[in-house]
Amino acid sequence: QKEVEQDPGPLSVPEGAIVSLNCTYSNSAFQYFMWYRQYSRKGPELLMYTYSSGNKEDGRFTAQVDKSSKYISLFIRDSQPSDSATYLCAPQTGANNLFFGTGTRLTVIP
Amino acid sequence: ETGVTQTPRHLVMGMTNKKSLKCEQHLGHNAMYWYKQSAKKPLELMFVYNFKEQTENNSVPSRFSPECPNSSHLFLHLHTLQPEDSALYLCASSQGGGGTEYGYTFGSGTRLTVV
Image 1: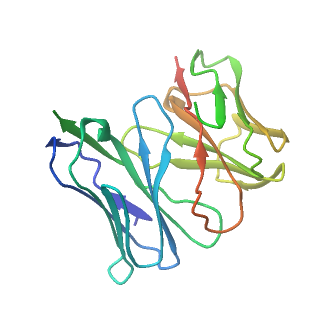
Image 2 (image 1 turned 180 degrees about the vertical axis):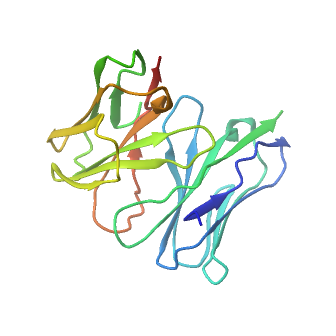
Image 3 (image 1 turned 45 degrees about the vertical axis):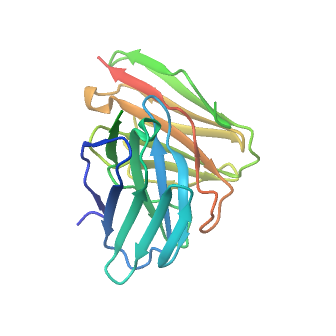
């Protein structure tokens, strides 16, 4: 079983839509949960960081972690064409190594 | 451009060539990483260096040889590669040690094609 499962998409939505991106994981030791955004021909950049279960909001982005079901979500409200990118979930144990999902490619159509 | 710079951006090499990828960070981080990114696969951790010492080699074939002369520079030496080694090679750095809200800082990667 993979450490992290993520639907690779692609996912296309109209501008203004609410986007839901999800991951599941198998390792109960994961405590830190990150979302990275990767634009074409660029490296991933950290978008959101959450510690343990709960929600965290940053502007149009909300990260949600449910440790009981091992489920990670990223919601994007009022999606914009500039949100078009690949989104990677990355849970982490207390050690320093991140585990990445495959990434979901999102396209927001004007 | 991020605080992590990778060169070259693109590289095409034959299976008998020897080449090197370079990574440089000026963020004061003490940990550096090499990742391999292939289509429809998760990022694969290759090597980890903490304070210039290699702390992890994730069962990477010996045709990939890392070098970390100081905390700011990381190299990946390549020789006798195979076509399946074609991928985006990403370098990252971090402050190291445990979970951190700052995560990793990635470079833009080197797109490697082995012919």
